[in-house]
Length: 162
Image (cartoon, rainbow, N blue to C red; front, side):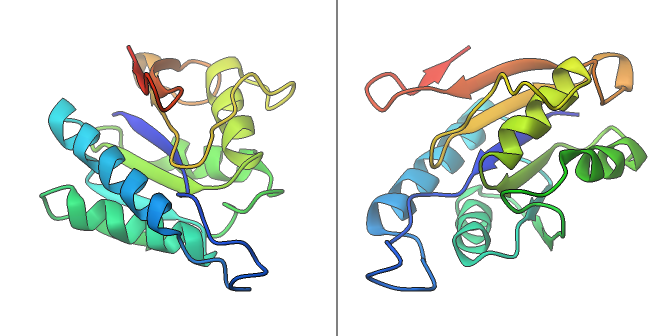
């Protein structure tokens, strides 16, 4: 199972729209993320997302652009300051075969990735920019403290590393 941790796309400022929907740039960046996942053959079968509007919109756009049926699932415990151990426990209960994406926020996603790779959420060794992706692969079918980073988005000029 691959786990794609995806930070929501760029959102409008709260001064422009208090609900903070995705900006045009954010929508474009999310479409590019979906194209990359599709091209790599790693499009997830399901996307868990935060209840916050910009994360819901990111998840819906990803699903729309992945070119395959994708189950969207709103989940608790995916907001900025939530405890990443709660999501790690849910992941540990999942059967491993299906790829999954989680769309959320920082610093939660960085702490979750750190927990899954090192076994401890702090100090965080990962941070995702808007529309950033970090793909993790669990070692030996386990989750917490045994995964490794497979690929991640870096900068706009050279956005992907392997």
